[in-house]
Length: 88
Image (cartoon, rainbow, N blue to C red):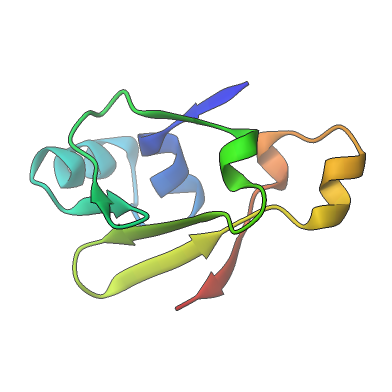
């Protein structure tokens, strides 16, 4: 499965709504692993969240690291199991 960047932002609590996420991306305020996201249709797979995970930034002060616990790699997982686990 895949999860689009707007859903990631909303699930992580970095944006209040999909519209808010879309605006932030279009205005250049979102980056993932220090790369600016400019396409609202950018998608991520569960593999993207494994290992070190993803560092997602919205604006200058909103920064979050998302990853899957290693134990989840041993069992089937879904995007509902991705949670913001560390504020940086």
